[in-house]
Length: 369
Image (cartoon, rainbow, N blue to C red; front, top):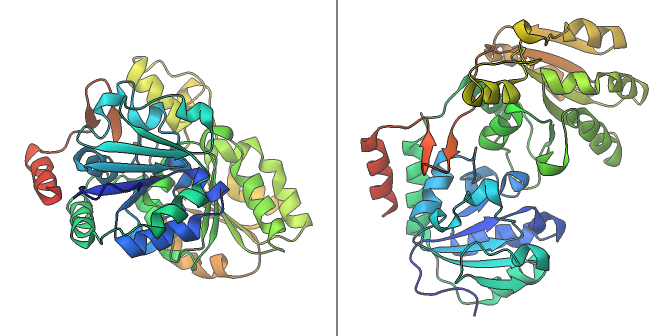
């Protein structure tokens, strides 16, 4: 038996290994059969969507997801590294009240322990989930409902304009879309707040093996691979400039790639580090320190792609038809240059920043009790 029947607050953490094993269907079946809450790694945010979505864990993970991990009593990790960005340098603080079972196909990942007493299974994720589904596991509906209640309590926090942009885009996307995401602040906002309708959509996220500029080629490749199907590309102003010449490929191949630029006119992820860790010694990340942004609308128009510049994400409603037709387009959405990426786990202090009120934290803990 894999499952610990004595658990009252179990969770399953799914990593991209579940996708690699072709086991997403089994994962969704397990979640609906048992009502055990499923959280994901950042690379695997598209595995659980729609009414099952709680969020992803780690340094820039959803606050509720990290708080659920802190309160649970049993962790089943499938195809997830549980690396530094998920568990911190002192892994004993990760899921401190829980026993841990890890399943991975990579023996070298399992050679690194998160907890001395963890249970390890060197096995394909599809086979492992099949074994779990064959076990007699009770339904944890009450516990799942508590997790979603905690999510509701925290809904008004970490609500930066970047998150609101991504939620607005989510509202306008069709069911089961293919969305490619570049690298930067918008990547984390997308992982936190992009909510797909249906169980078969994809979020092609760079994770640890893609660099700035990957979003547009991801969207182009996905469209070609799916016979010219519509794909969506969420990209920052910095990432778009890395491969902007691929506009020509989109036009030449007549691909309906919808490019949504989240444009704060800074290299946000790097400039945040320069602000937080280097006393505002900005270098090639802001307008004042050597970074600039072209007029993307004019560039796209020069390639023959219809384009528009929006002063606010709320204007996206005026361009719904652009997102639905069979033509490529570019929509450049302006954000304030000082837009923040939150929350962030301070692993050394064991807190999430920015801190929220102790009364709210206590309310969430009581809800998850």
